[in-house]
Image 1 (cartoon, rainbow, N blue to C red):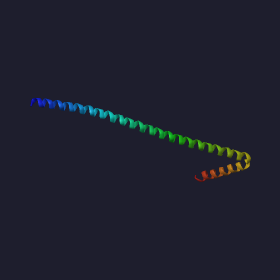
Image 2: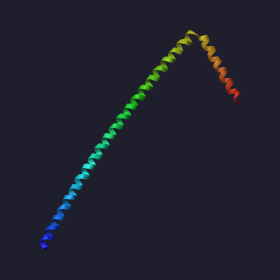
Image 3: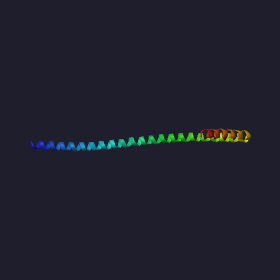
Image 4: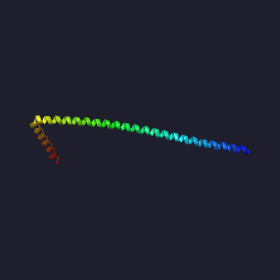
Length: 104
């Protein structure tokens, strides 16, 4: 009987050791999986951020070009019609001045 208990005790110790190894291996596998998933998520976020940055930069550049074109057009109109430009500027000055004085 004593031999049976020793054998069972040895078997249990072997099983516990095997379980520890399996748990350790499983833990390593889960850690690698989590790291891989985190790396993939990080890359996806970086990619999306870069895409939005490029889209924003493109929209900014488009707006900048439109503003430059409009400014050039306004300059041409002022050069071709200087008296009309002065009259418009004077009229705007009067309207703004009247609004400022009227609010006091």
